[in-house]
Structure formats: C-alpha cells, structure tokens
Length: 308
Image (tube, rainbow, N blue to C red; front, side, top):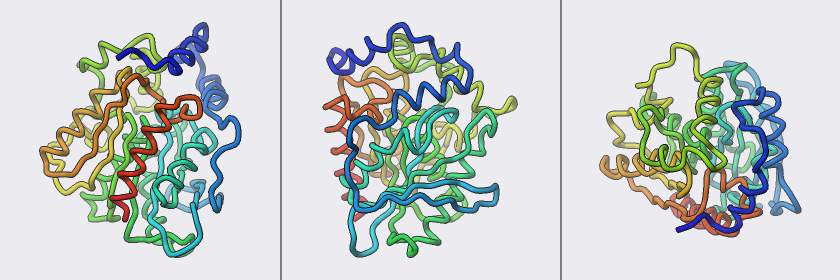
C-alpha cells in the first residue's frame, strides 16, 4: 500500500532539512532530540523514577516506569534507537510510558554510552550490565527478577537481540522475551531488497546508515560478530520468544523479517508483523501516527502475554 497519509505529511515537513550524513554528531543529536522529544501531555504512569547505577565500566543512568502499585511486576529493559550515536531517555519517554501501561510491566529505559565517544561494544556492555542489575536489584523497585525481558527500536533493538545471545552464551541472566522494533540485524553490504527499495526518500537512508555505522563501529570491526549483527549467528535455538515489528517503507524491513524467519526455523516462538504504510522510526512518532499507536499496542499485547 502507499505510505500512510500522516507519515507522508511528516516526511513532507522534513523536506529541506540537511541529510544526517552532512551533520556533525552534536548537530545530529540536537536534531534527534528536537524531532522526537515528547509533544503534548504524555501518558500518565503510576511512578517514574530516575536512577544511576554502577557498572564495571562506570555509571549508567536509567529511568523506571512503573504502571501501577501492587505485586512484583515483570520488567522490560528498553534500549533506545538512534544508530548508537543519538537519542537519550527523553527522546523515548512517551514510548516507554505507553509500553509500561499497555504491557503492564515496569519499563527500565537505559541511557547507554554512545559513539563515537564510546564505540561498539561499549553500548552492549552497558545494556548487559544494566540487565544484570535489574535482575539482582528487582526487589528494590517492585520488579520480578524471574520475568525480565529486553527490547528496543532500531539500533536499540539490535542491542536487545545481541544481549539475548550474550545471555544465552554466558548462562544468564535469564531473558523471558525480546521486543524488537525495526531492528538492524546485519550489515547492508551486500544489500537486501528492502535496502534497495527504501534506501532513499524516507527518514532513514543508506547514506544515513553509513554515517551512523562509521561513527558506531571500531575500525577493525568483525562483520561476522553475532552480537553486533545477530543474523550472523549460526544457531538461534533456545533464545527467548520474540515480538518483532518492521515497517513497510524501511530499509531495515528485511532485517527484522529474516530474523523472525530464522528464529521460527530454530523453534523459537515469534510474533512478527510488517506494519503497512509506516517508515523507520514510527514508534517514536506514535503521537502523530494513529497506525503507529495501534501497532505498539498490538505488540504490547503480545509482550504482556509472554510476560505473564
């Protein structure tokens, strides 16, 4: 189908902006914050708490969204998107609120270290250490240490999938589910069909992807590293069930689709949906996209079932 009319209006409004690959890192971060910070009144949750936790590599800020009072709740460690270069707790505040309420779980948003100051695997190390902390300290924030899930959008979804692989190989922490919104799961060279079909004309372009990866990856990165590119993993058995959403007009569409197919082949339960008419980044634009709201709530419904 055609691009959703609301999405088309957002795209039209962005015409004339300089491409991200022409910006400095500081300029790109400022634009991302301006574009995706909460607008209007965000959803109310029972409690929002900022904490700073200690990890082997230093301090990591997190934000805990608790939807209601009561018995220990499942926990979703959420890693924001932004190519590993941009984004923070505020850019994804509205999305985390919606997920906490719709999935009836505590969402722990993680402000992991960004590149180019801290290249891969710094962000993954922060996410792994934070997830361990969530298990160990769950009782301090009404969380259930036996029901810990991971999730994210775009590069954050890649971190979540990579973390699930790391946890499997290291024997923990136990992850009960993974929520992946339009993940980057492999290098785009050689390109997949969606790279070719949607590599220009939408918010995320192939040129933009190169800019992000050039900042994010060390000079000597390994294209076969499964924690970086989970589609490179040869064995996906015994991974947690997954809920995966992709977007029809996204160069990363086939990354998520291929990962869903390979998980299913490995015997891992998967709910997969390609959201028609949407483009990359739709989850953080949900307050301006009715179809995005519906898709997020549908994904949260499936996550809630897995977490219960």
